[in-house]
Image (tube, rainbow, N blue to C red; front, side):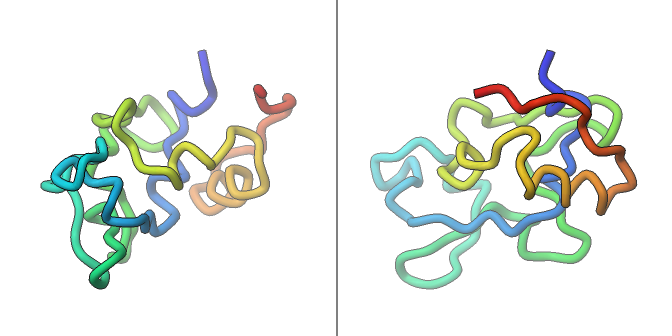
Length: 106
């Protein structure tokens, strides 16, 4: 099991902005109903532009058991964030979670 399934800190730490062409209504896969416009060419996942940050697609309790309700439809920034990366460790620390003690999967 991935550490991500018990963490979720990144989904409650970072703004998730991406190009509108990733929206399902533009031929992509991200459900437009879960996003909000930033400008004419960029949108973001609802909840990630607010404080406290929490992506609307995140289910569960951070640090315990979480899931992404649109995992297979998530936007590019979510695909790019890797378990064990600097951003992962920073998000975990922000939520009081210990650093991962293993190498991230490739």
